[in-house]
Amino acid sequence: MATQPASQARALNGRTLVITRPVGTAGAMARQIRARGGVPVLLPGLSLRAADDAVATRAALREALDAELLLFTSPAAVRFAAALLPLETRASVLAVGQGSARALHRHGLTAQAPEQRQDSEGLLALPVLQSLQGRRVALVGAPGGRGLLRDQLRARGAHLHEVQVYQRVPPRLGPRHLELVRHLPADARVLLSSAEALQNLQAALAPALWRRLCMALAVVSSERLASIADAAGFSRVQKAASARGVDLLAAAAM
Image (cartoon, rainbow, N blue to C red):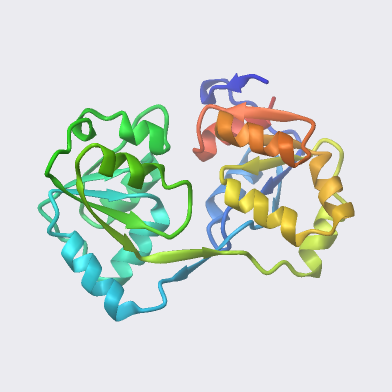
């Protein structure tokens, strides 16, 4: 298993790429795939919904905007937060990845984000998060996940305030999705950047369809996800440089 840098991106030459990103968020990647000569197939592994109690969540977010450090875990966290309140803050703003930083920029906020490893580990490596004793830190995201950010921020001494502005739930796969999996070509690539999405798809697909999906090459965004994909049944796994679309597509073109 090797890592393919985006700088070595090549044409996709008619290859089918399965996009597992949440419902309604795959449009930009699908356009990139078509522009490079590939065939996008949408097989969402997650569906995103607003938090159930909008009033309580809005109050929690208002408190978070008064923190010293304000962390956003994803572009979805930015989108759902901005739907509740204007994102006006004097806090130092951080984002797990460049996609989240761009989303924040669209709402008038400049965010610091890791350049290379765009995940929780990359964010935690930033100098500003090394010593947090007594500092007020707010974490904006969704329930679930690994909990690494939460645990490490507290371990470093932060007074942590969590705001769960949205929730991730399993998607509803219809007959069209099942037919797409049933007829996937042998050289298809499955783009994976979420362990939760992978697990939801495995639960949603009948065993025969899951085996069909696992015949494709899994293009994953991290070593951790590579191990999960391997354990789930993918016999071929290719690691991308990051979860960014450009890096996933570069790895898929190999």
